Amino acid sequence: MPVRPAQAAAWASMLLAVTGGGWAPAQVVAAPAVPRGPNTVRQRIVLGHSAAGRAIVARRLGDPDSPRRLLVVGSIHGDETAGIAVARRLFHRAAPADLDVWIVPTLDPDGMAVGRRQNSRGVDLNRNFPFRWQRLADPGAVQYSGERALSEPESRIAWRLINRIHPRVTVWFHQSLGVVDLSGGHAALERRYARLVGLPIRRLPRYPGSATGWQNHAFPNSTAFVVELPPGPLSGRRAGRFAAAALTLMAETGPTGPVGPPPAYERKPSAS
Ligand SMILES: [Zn+2]
Image (cartoon, rainbow, N blue to C red; front, side, top):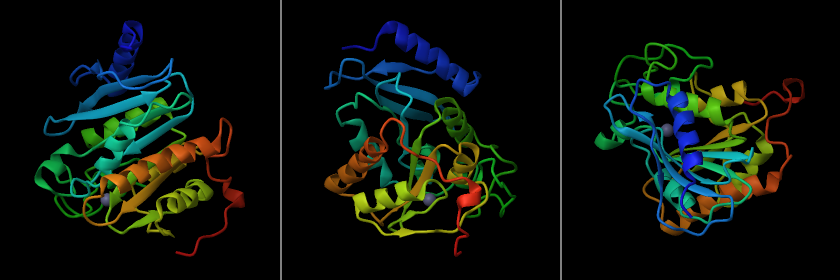
């Protein structure tokens, strides 16, 4: 079943709004026939372009009318790319009838093209988000924050998308510590994901200007967390497990399950 023209047009205009105009028009392209339910879609959407002009693409599957949105970002650091296989696996699963699933295989295509952590302007994109942003390091240094929050087109693309779709759960893949990070969202969800994929859970340092820090602060009824994959590429089977676990997490929260962290007054002080 092709994407309905009215729906495709609506999404194209929405994404033009998302990207703020000025960049290339968004495209909505129906993928070849795949299994899907009666009200589900499977789309490829160009969200915008990197600093060096490469397309940053989202894949979307499931029910576009569902308020239960999952966002998976396969890679934000160009030299940590194993999560792209998870993104691919997720997109090739049967479209879930009750979820709106957004997948961004990579937010840093320029870094990936040369195998480095930063974007083409030398900025660590995961230090460029607008919560507790601080000027860190110098251009090209490992954790260079950029000149200001959201100085980079790649982080602005993610910021606009998240502001528009308000994902209940967001999973950001990194490498290569082999842990799920207690990132400041709903800890039970983060722990559950770690159990589902067979990784230990740890609380890694909270860095200024990180994507998860911003999301968990700006959207208290949602959870965004980091999964540090092990070094090297994932086997197809293992990538499939990480993809399936994200859908399981969404299924287990149900239509009204808690997905945000508890109010601040209920939080226990953390150890590190
Ligand atoms: Zn990383």
